[in-house]
Amino acid sequence: MALRIAARQWESTSDLCCRSRARIQNVLLGGDHNYALERTWCANQKRTLPSLQCVYREERAFLQRAVRFATEERGLRRFLAIGTGLPYVDAVHDPVLTYDSGRVVYVDDDQIVLAHLDLLADKRPEIDAVAGTLLVPGTVLFDDATQRLLAPQDPICLVLCGVLETVKDTDELAAAVQDYTDRLPAGSLVIVSHATVDGLDPQDATDRALAESMREVCKAYADKHAPQRHLRTAEELRHILSGLDLIDPGITYTTGWRPAQSAKARRHAESLFLAAVAVVPETRTLPTDAATSSLGTRR
Image (tube, rainbow, N blue to C red; front, side, top):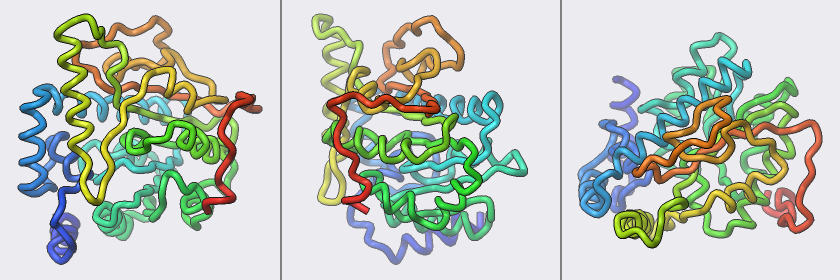
């Protein structure tokens, strides 16, 4: 409670002229760390897409299942979580820090989120907060907290839920993800989710309306401080994860991803996020048309 009060006091002195994507997510996940302008935005968008809250809760439920898979089935205890939002509802650290050796480094470029993460890190020595940007890997990988996380050279888990759809250029995003995964020890896991309308039938009136509603919601994210959300297909996500080994059931929908489930999951009518967990192999074979690595030029 004291942590939340301190965070609210910080926000009261900050620029609250525009809605925050992190607080929007907090509303949709049923949290209480948000303001009227985010609640109004969500209410408006739920009129466009009535299942919006369910869609985001299913995406967060996938994240929790995937983190438990990483800790319980793969024995991973160190996590690098980029762009996962406010750390209050089903946060990455919740299952990780049940282990004495659990460590989480959170990364974000949202000053509001970073203020909350810094306050959390002050209370929990197992947590660090890094000011960094997904598309500038050097701001993340060369930070002292990340270096400490990687120092043991044991596999870690990279979490990229809630962030890929903020990037428009697919090749640029693929290059950035490659920069991260090239520097992870073999056996590391990558957890990703991505907004989509893939799998909806454009010839079906209900599916077509659902797809259009999701597109409208994605556009509504845009304001003077933030881009709209971008939808991608399973094949585009596969390109972004080039060189990694997908764990069964591969790229599927958040409602259907279960570890070691080899049968292709049926698509739930309201599942509008793709989900995947991949492992960093001993050696990586990159496609010949892969975008040039950008770590050195954008550090």
